[in-house]
Image (cartoon, rainbow, N blue to C red; front, top):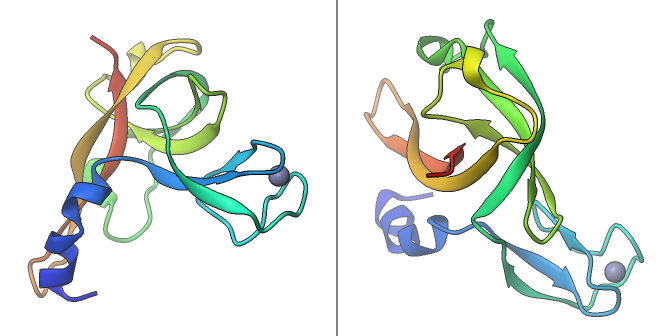
Length: 130
Ligand SMILES: [Zn+2]
């Protein structure tokens, strides 16, 4: 994706966007072409809530290439207030203070920098709710 297009789409990236099944109400994240629950392709745009709670997590100490500087970091499964489950990085907290059930809120944060061309990528992470 070109840099201008990336920045043009920036407001959309600050929210978790997905699709909701018109037939059964199920939400998949990331969005799919068909509902994973009932198979329907009648899906409508849906903005996921920005709050939830931590249901499970792991602490990453051996990171993939490009993420080495971030270790240790926490990857968690968050149950949003609409009950949708998402896998996301947990930020702004010491890994030793992370606990199942902790309330979380979304935040737009830097993910990584492309070393050669210097492009900084951003994405949604979750932090302890204030
Ligand atoms: Zn469905």
